[in-house]
Amino acid sequence: MLVSQIVTNIQNTLEDDGVYATDAFVLDVVNNGYKLIAALTMFDERRGTVSVSGARNMVYMPQVSSAEMLGPAYVANTSTGNRVSPARLEEFELHLAEWEGQVDSADTMYYTMLAPYHNSESMLWCMPVPSTGSVGLTIVGPCIPVDLVATDTPRLPEEYQDLLYYYGLFGCYVAEPQRAEDAVGAYKVFVERTNQLIEQLKSRFPSWQGFRPSPVEFKYTTIMRYQQKQAAQTKGAEVEENESK
Image (tube, rainbow, N blue to C red; front, side, top):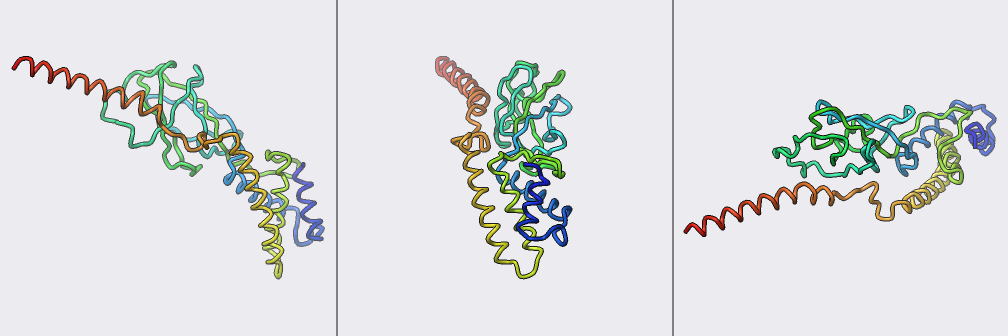
């Protein structure tokens, strides 16, 4: 549905043909709702790319068609398609030489988020640090869309575009005196429909793994392997010392 039709539907319900609820005012309210829906539901999933190098292993989340990406749902090496696994910052053992090794297009990498879900400040911190060249990463994640204009069609699933209608009603009722009850009624429907959209999107990620990843792979492939090697070397030294006695 075109945005102009959503605006007209709101004005018709208000019985206001652009007198108080002007096209510009209603469109502004609709855009506020559009961005709020994107932040609450993460419906606007897009694909972007970043380049990571030894001199630039902390990179901002990409913009996709001017839309700011909130955070990563999935990260992969662009050239190989191998997953770049998530990890928590405290699990980066930065004092180990393993984090300074050479990284080429086939090497495994890990990432953590700094200031996650703050779209103007969030950064991806990638490890190990590439020492030569650069590594391209493809990131799939939810975005905050840019403002709609009258001739646009919202990126929302068609069956949920009524969310913009109900939020638009809510915003217009709030701006009018004596319409608090109407505003609450419209907002209740907006919340109910938003929750339905969230449940539909969550069904694509049954364990919510895409948005709250568990860094199991990271722990096993890097830290545990290094610790096991160190433990084996220590045990071997102890055996030699006991035999010498």
